[in-house]
Picture 1 (cartoon, rainbow, N blue to C red):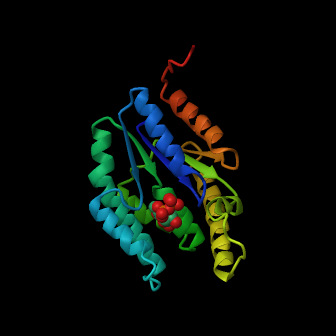
Picture 2: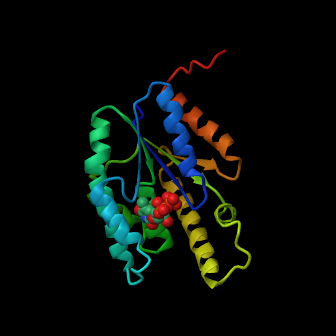
Picture 3: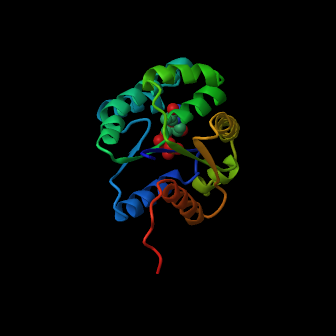
Length: 213
Ligand code: TYD
């Protein structure tokens, strides 16, 4: 039974829109759906998120960063995900441990295996039943969200390079978990991607849609 679904991808991959639409449509089909996100999703986890994403924390060490993401994940898991799963709800989570594997493990260079291990401790091995990785060229993703930018400065270039690494990280992680992670071609129109994802979920849940006219 599919109960815990996560969504992964780089900037501008359309995750948020897709999750919002799923919440609406799956709820209308009668599923009891919980939408949540990482880092954050509960009060303490949101406080940790604030520390991690605070632009003033330029001195943040990469390992400290990975541990903070794992701590935020643990808290969110205990407060939101596990109780929701116990109550038989369908949990849709925007990012989960694969983000740490791709961003901290691969792109920051800490090593996917090492970051997996600290997350193993944080989650006690609780993996999603299903993960959608929405794969999009970071140039397309970034242009979707910064279409007003005229010139590319040094920071933009660094960011673009980092996001290329993140994408390679995700592709690597998807290869490691072929049963769990479904890679979706994210360069198509968002509604087309959404329909594909929704159909996969419904198929996997063996749900009979009553859309036959
Ligand atoms: P957020 O604004 O939630 O990004 P998005 O809308 O793209 O999901 O910021 C979360 C940032 O944190 C995002 O850049 C990805 C990063 N991140 C990690 O590096 N590791 C992690 O484990 C998680 C959950 C997120």
